[in-house]
Image: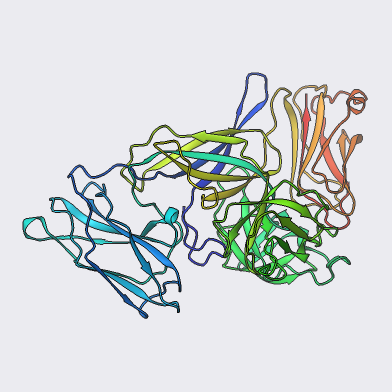
Length: 526
């Protein structure tokens, strides 16, 4: 899938799609799978026997394009046959760009493979060896004696970081890995509602905390990193305005028609200032915010990794965190971060991994789906990365691996049968009848009761009461900062049987005073 050209984080970049599936095991527990769909690398070549094209010479112009300044471009071409299979790639040409951005280059005196049946070409360009990918295509016109035109190709950008890679016979398979994302930004929250150019986010309702009275989300990037029971959209936007009285943020590009209520949103990190003079530390005062006025817990991030996903250090291998305060993290090796750059904090190892079988693919549009078993997490974020593995078993570098973030909503196992389920979407409020009353067609002796919220309350907890036949039957509370409550054995033991055809209802009697909490689900198990 491809991000929009105006995406705030990954403009025009291609990546894989992510979803979640759950299967019931024999013991009633749930097996969770990440379902990853994407296009395979190309390692098969044209049966025409087409060799590599030849590049005769290179001309450059300081105008006529949008190439970046002061970089070394890696450039190659392939011919493509009528079946969509590529020739061997040309030698990689190295082209240095000018001191000012905006130039272009022309490959001249190109010699195409002298075989019949070629119909098009692909131009591959990148600024790094491991990111050489398709940037432009065009038609080949056959001439006499298996010759082809055009004899020259001009390219001026824009340069897209990630499309499909230069074909290589050395690619053996694809490896997926996943790990816990500790922090995707300063606030994670559900989207309450969507309108043209705006999102309502309950976590952003209220005044800045006394610990950071100048806090504002304006200027930061938001990303959608999860969707219940569906694939996560590939969408990021810049916050342009904030109404603290309602939690409404204006964003660009327009989220309407892409983002949905209930999607999981993250408000990204943003540096207070460049760390160029001290490139092993960064401060983001926004870590102290409406949802988390105290910021990060000092020392809690030590041992985790920091990965830059936007900015000058994107592609740098993740750095190990050695210290942190409420608003500052410090790591081991130099890595430049500037205002506007984006980073995430992740656990140090990849506990989940899955390989494809050996590849034999010549179609860059060939789609495959890979199911990777993971733990059945409830309301946790994962970082998912794709790697290629060569014929010698060597894995592509971590820093430049394409990644997705996915909020795992989780699923209840069926070792106990959920007789009744109440679901209350969006930001919560005090309500005597918070959901439609339910009825059972048989008497039920309850074995367990659990409550979950998608976004935790802050300031104080959530309290809800379940009623049977109009009488209070069970009261539970989810503490501030928590997302789960489970009835204790003594509470379960004290419950009376729910008789058949009895109205069972739920009321919310208290919510968080700073943020109420959102999307409450209550399961009553037999």
